[in-house]
Length: 248
Image (cartoon, rainbow, N blue to C red):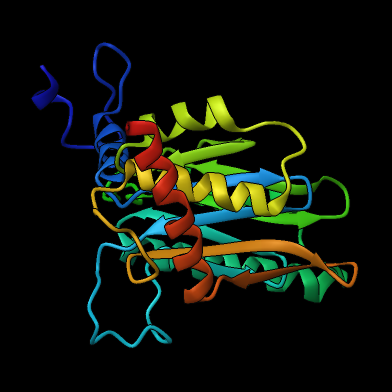
């Protein structure tokens, strides 16, 4: 039955489903593990890189985390080339808002704008949905630190902790048990490391395979920064022994 209705995004099946959009969502589940987490004093995003080589110039290569403006960034799961188009749109929208209004764009407004673009690609013939999901993290004065998830259908939702990509059900189960209100940024980083240790296929996850980023308050302003390789290695090394203790 599905084969008769999955050739176009504009054709509903008799059950009311759009198969091409559902297939795009399935592409996200094959991507590297990606985790986002809110803390009282910041927000964390981390992702597993699938392309790893000692020959890569890490200064010029980003696969999972991308800065949007000073106080916002996003993590990507899915087709990176599709993500690049949308990330450029996010950056332009954020910059236009600053130019027009003299203040940074509210996080939810930016997420709504990009989801409108995604939804448009599910409604017109000759187009295919963007095969990418985002976790968008940021801060604005009205709502503080925020974390949003978007999917290829154009839906978005706000979360306190969320995971996309491979083994995301396992990751969300751990976060439901361990995440608590009022978590500090360092505790959120440690919990994120624990989640990735459990969900990644790699035996010894380290900075070569992972990207970590945070938005935190610096001198009264929200600032994005990527964690250095040494910080990532320490987080993952600290998380690994705990796993071994639990198994013994």
